[in-house]
Amino acid sequence: MFKPKVPTMPEPTGLITPPTVVEPTAMVQHTPHSSMPLAVPTAAARPTVQLTPGAVVALVGGGAAVVLVVGAVLVSMLLAVAITGASVAICALVIRSLIASADQHR
Image 1 (cartoon, one colour):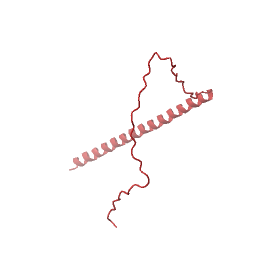
Image 2: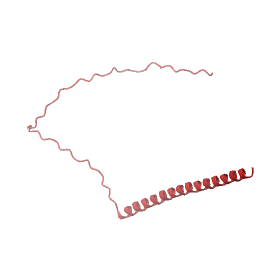
Image 3: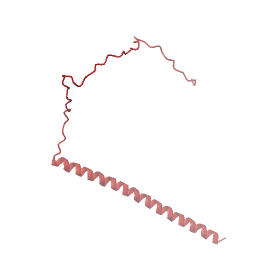
Image 4: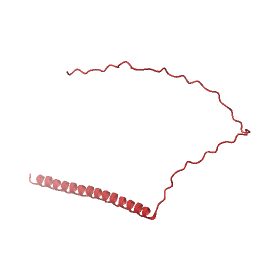
């Protein structure tokens, strides 16, 4: 039950094709003085992006909202770190004062 079973590699089933051998083909030399015209590649037709005034206002509003949200999150994180640091400093002062007063009463 607790002994692991090592899987065995099954024999391949079906037709197995032998590897194909690719033989080099003859290269055709093109001379620059040839009378054959060269094909000029055409630019692929890409859809153009048209921004309407409403879309521009939406983009600006969305960007401003993202900046405000990210700024609020960063400010709140900074405030949390500052409050934590101040409370740790106050705790350190209280503990130091308790230790100092305990040493005076001995």
